[in-house]
Amino acid sequence: MDRRNFFYSATALLAASMFKARAAAASDQRALNPPGIRTAGIRMLPVMGGKYKVWTKRVGPAGNDGLKVLLLHGGPGFGHEYFECFEDFLPQAGITFYYYDQLGSAYSDQPDDPNLWTLPRFVEEVEEVRQGLGLEQFVLLGHSWGGMLAIDYALKYQQHLRAVVISNMTAGIQSYLANIPALKALLTPQNRARLEELEAAQDYDNPDYMRIMMEDAYPQVICRLQPWPDSIMRSLMHANQKIYNQMQGKSEFQVTGNLKDWERWDQLHKITVPTLTIGARHDTVPFADLQRMAKLFPNGRNLTCPNGSHMAMWDDQAVYFDGLLRFLKPLIA
Image (cartoon, rainbow, N blue to C red):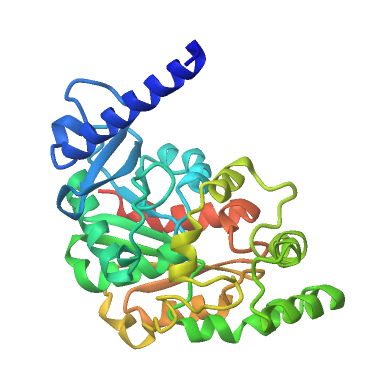
């Protein structure tokens, strides 16, 4: 064995040993987060009773007793990176917020267990994260799939919440699916015909499918900035497609996974804390749904971003954060 191969082998063994030691200590907060060591607000938190760990990061003063916001990213299976623009707005307003990579995403553990990828289990994971961070009377902001997760968390654990923000997510999959023909109509006739041909054959792995989505669909309805910000690109690179496929399905335009029967329109009235819905006119999600949802929440209000898409925090940034901060500032103790 030459020296280079020996080095690689030794490094791999050391990494494996360290991983096993960390996994064995996953339920021990002191082992995951050594006391007295500054980590730029990063904490690894045990979930599922300590079997796995998830990555979190506080942005804002450690001793801030004011308003705190926990962010739930989209996907399922994406990560926190595309939220990075929040750093230019919330801390300056005196608001501390937390990034959190859900289990299976980006910097958190990524177990290969299909039984884990269910909405009820993710709800319990959010509650474990809340406990681990010591949050009480906090704001939960969920974007896209994170909006679904925020609604279900609020329906079960509302007593811990000061407010909820549902960003770019409707209250039911059927309404989302009903909007798909309007989204396909945005494509060029040639791309639309090819897309429907591939969908009919269920040939979602065909290079043409992703080409049409990335070159024609997504620039219109996911993010209208060109080129896309680096934060969004890093989220895409870290995406866990196994989770996405199992929960959403093979396509953005079809929902065939575990979430296909999710409907919460008739339960929104149970969420009584202040609730903001944020929609955008060029989104994959009908902005009218977000307006309707605001009326169904007893203490709801709506913000519509006229120039935004699914990533309105990027492509209609001024409107998005002006409206978000107008909602959050009165909640600051």
